[in-house]
View 1 (cartoon, one colour):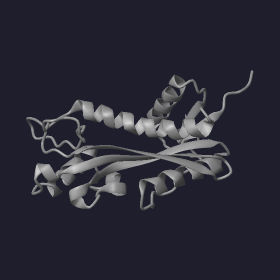
View 2 (view 1 turned 90 degrees about the horizontal axis):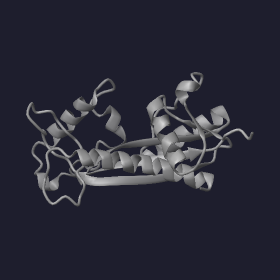
View 3 (view 1 turned 180 degrees about the vertical axis):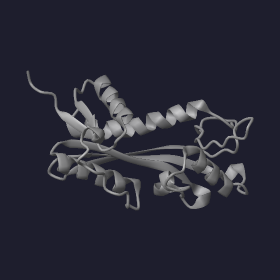
View 4 (view 1 turned 30 degrees about the vertical axis):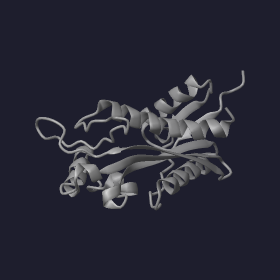
Length: 199
């Protein structure tokens, strides 16, 4: 029996690896998908790029060369027009290294406090890369356009989800937007992996 090709996801997040494995399986591509949690000897490079693409490519190339197998990586975050594209590549560290998602949302919404809702256009941006053992890499990018909203419900919890632009009304909380964002994110990963594999 021919062994399945192996793909390592350049992340310690096993759930992300499982998600990519499911997407590839749905497309009829049979990879054995692993994560860097399976290879503790390999450390991710610091995310020092000025763009999501640079960070994704660096992680994919590093993992692929270090392990001698195909690797996938991504970088993503929120870009707010009124903040000149911030937090951008700093999204994960926007409120400090140990901050929670809630902390980051609160900081962002505090900076938008005086910005009218009509000027809160934002996008969720994802770059996904596929690297090979010889240091080559492919890249795909996707965005989900929307608007940042204020406190979403009783208790004042901050929300920072782009709402889908086809919505005609302003919603304080839009569960569908979170799903749409996840689909764009996983879709970008899948496109670059499938393209590299020739599927």
